[in-house]
Length: 195
Image (cartoon, rainbow, N blue to C red):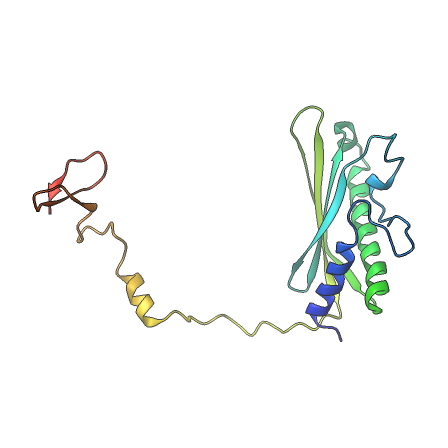
């Protein structure tokens, strides 16, 4: 059974090989299924999209980002197409993970797709979507219970003394005004008073 550290390293190697313009060992471009791979990179306008992963305990988060047209956001199939894009990325990660590590990666979808569409103008619009997958077969240490208070007793007594704004303590910063007199003021708008 693989540890979560081994699985994380394998997934990180997969994601490290997926930058825009990456090639495999045969010199062929790596095809993930993203929109930026479609068309000719010189003649066609490029669609900017990509993904990243995050880890949350025994879960893998796939975060997808893409520039879109506003009319595409109003399409009824937009949400299902975005969910399918994340599924394609997950299947690519599983396939490449098997290639790199020699063992299979099991991902089970947890929850629903979380997507947000934002724009900066009437022209520029983008979508940010994420979905979480439970990593199967991960050997994780279980949570043993609530954490215990490990603050040193000296530091705890220091914290219990309160802050410098306590009424029992003199307020303000002492300022030397010359001729052996130290004065202080409450704030910058109040007058100086001898201490």
